[in-house]
Length: 282
Image 1 (tube, rainbow, N blue to C red):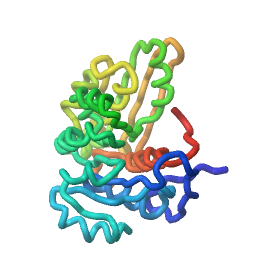
Image 2: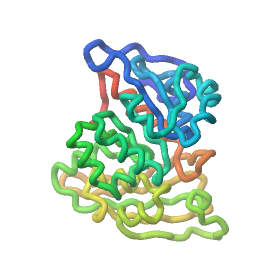
Image 3: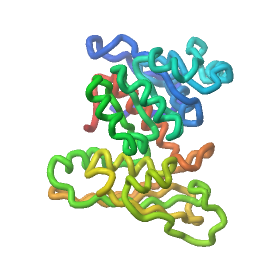
Image 4: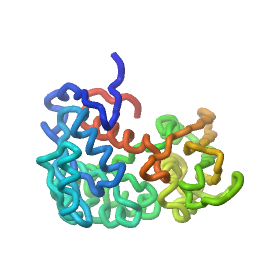
């Protein structure tokens, strides 16, 4: 049986999930309806498994979101102010930028919901959010986003990981470095330092750090390369159980070149796993 394609514009719906595996229907809320939030909303309207329903979208100016919700196929969903969103849903997809994401996570992390954060660097900068989520029974589900190999990294972390290195190369437009003539290294340091310097660009570094050996031991290089048309990530993991070498070439989003097209698909995969009876991968 072929795997379901998580295409935000697909129109094929999946069968309903088995009874007894969770709530009959999970109420989904999206904070921020930018390009990623819109792609997730399209998928929820067109091809999400039964059991997921977009009930609300939160924004700083909710009155401007109502027409967008209609166009995305959600006439019954509400457009509400961001502070109202955590109480309106069972699953909150946080699509806000890093500055806005901290406020949203701070407001909802104690409520026992399921939260899917996109600005993973916020969790790296504020580990107390993770501690509060654990105490409250809140489930933080960090999507893989633009990174592969997390299953093996998490497995390797059960033993001894010697090193994790990430080299990210992007077109200059995605790094605010337009005008250069050749490939230039613009950063070298830890994942924590990378997320502080480029919080909108290196969620992949934060995700690797959370899954592996932490923010200070995960090493990152960032290169600006005008010859590239894709975001290229080279990952090297050395552990007592395996050596992992990965090269990823992701298409940047046309609307936001700092992000990759696959990011929205990854969020949809996390949502689908919440209601599907079979889950592949750790």
